[in-house]
Length: 263
Image 1 (tube, helix red, strand yellow):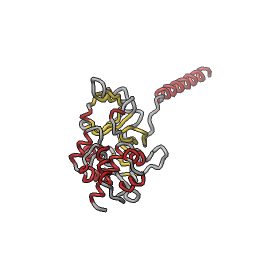
Image 2: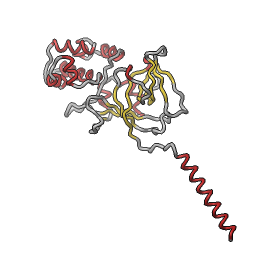
Image 3: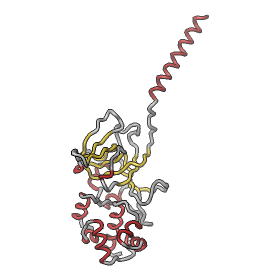
Image 4: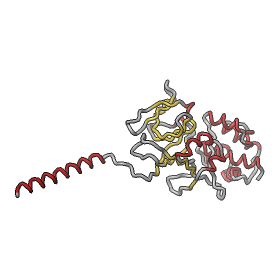
């Protein structure tokens, strides 16, 4: 496969996934057949110039960036409403894999999140569950700390990429990749359209106060969809169980005293 065609195929699929579009949806927007778009993304067909221009216009990047992957263009795209996301792909079937970002890799992720080579080097896996749909990009982030109890520290959060930050919020849980605090797991109140113009990050654990993060400090936002944990969460009623156990012990001791006195 010619290098330019390989670059085009990779960037086209990456841009489509970043928008959360299926092949059919993008093909309809451009005026193509889905099979033709699939051939472009797999590098099996060379696109006509008119289609390359149409793709570039749709994704609001230059033709040169689409064909060659110009770094400065991709960085500009990431900084606007469209962010170019690198995704790991299975070479045998060209299907996306779920990349795993453990706690020990969180610092490196801030430097390499936009580098296809770095992302491809992360551990990956497939998740053949009906809830994990093919038209979304997934990533698994490990969290640490107690700010989101009862989800225990060390859990892995399965998340989907949010390309449009105006859609995040509603007090839903998210993984937020920030320049200053790294990878954090919080609920978000979206205040971009208010005078605050920020995200209000809130912990489930009331011992951790909420705080403000400006969009300029945010690198990526991922919506939490589920989690994998190897330590069972502590139930909220565990304290009541301990109290009940203590009362039962006291009752048993009192009964023993009464029985001894009767003798």
